[in-house]
Image (cartoon, rainbow, N blue to C red; front, side):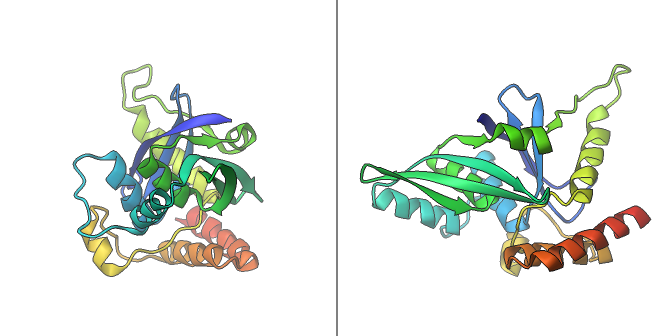
Length: 222
């Protein structure tokens, strides 16, 4: 297993509607790029950004972490264990309670949001990193130009084309207003991405495959 850290979470570069989560290895040589929902981005960003305003009431991940603590259950680590059909990341939450260890199936974003709250390590299987990991772009190229921006745009476009998009939920309207990620006017591409996320959440994989093809077509014609 390879230990990961949350390198960054925020809008893509240039700004689009869908936030991006960067998970880097400890040496910051490789990175996993996940397109995520606004609610998930806020749940993660609120834990890594000291300047992020805390919500007035506990979020879902805060509640789950409180439940674990109440029952003396410890989140030992979370693991991004599988990249299924080159399309869906699968994650596991490893919990120890009453002297017994158990594994809970999870979306990567939920597992990571919980791990940050429980101060638990985040890992990825080596074969997943080999299949989906990218080389971390450098901030400057040999000519001193800002190569990071171009590299981010290229890697995020590639991640989207290959359909490596984790399941993500659309935030409630009031939550969207409290997050710094402001949505752009809805486009056919954005609509298709939202439909893809809904299909993944509902495990309608045939619809997801069709929508992935539609997204590829829209991206190529953009």
